[in-house]
Length: 431
Image (cartoon, rainbow, N blue to C red; front, side):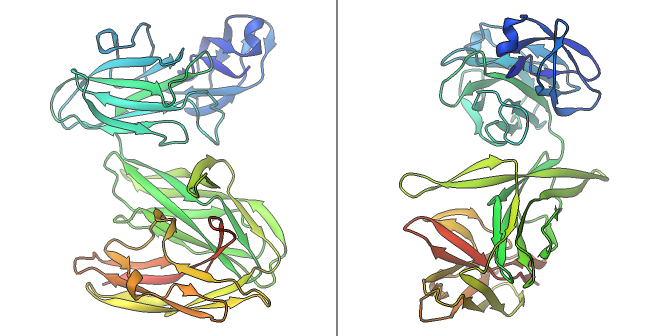
């Protein structure tokens, strides 16, 4: 069995579901016993007297309805009460599912698809897209791929009235294996976290960086503390709290000189205080693949891996000063020294921003602080060891204290692929 329909059920109840996959040949219907705990679960179902393999199920306390076909246009949209949830299926090629709802001026509504989410048991074939439309069909808001291949968005009506939400497959595909659960609820403060890249490779004494991006929703505007657990022996990481006025934070992983060769899949999560309660969310890792033409593609993965290897080509990257305090309008020149492994003579390129071929993938600099490329010496050629980075605070840069940053030393493998090494963290404040 690969899936069940409906995909979402209410807690602590038995529900009749349709098995999708080989179990369907045994019986068209089966029984699913839902646990009391909300969230995504991997559960077996009972077909006659036989239990199937576990498959992905969402347990929700939202009132549930089932999509009613035909609902392929505005006139036939399935009514959806908010809060509520829909079990549906993009059942054929180019299928469109419309739902009609009432909106209240200024009251934000969160729509989220649960179908195909990496790192979870949800393995629907659906690559979802959500569109919110006006009654006359004008697209007001759209989203694709917020959580893996699952779309989500928060819509705040500008006026009371009727609206539509449309769900479709990005590539206009569809079929029996494309079930989904669409949740619709009034937005509450929350956040999600993503990690780039998914792997860190460390030689003895060297460092590497992970960049954590927080997306705040539903009015949440506070700081988020990020922690890493399960690191290999001899590997440490800096403390990280992403301030309220920033969206990206830097984790610098460092291997001690005597760290043994090892590898471990680690845990990374974020914690924040919302409405007086501590809320903890997992971090979704993004692995990379280089696309035709040299672009950098990212896809979510379940594992976040740290490896201690033999000596790196770049043994150490050091930055002076190690603590920087800028006043608005000031700039600072960081001196960067690259220590190479004996015999390694490749060029090294320096940066403080995670970017590739002009694309910016993570900028960990505080709000109002920029890297001045024209005043930076980022190329460290084979016969040199020193470069520098110039940072500048804008006249209106807000205050921030001790933001951890690092300088990356990027080494090209070919015209696209590169390996990155980093300095230990240095701290930057704007006062």
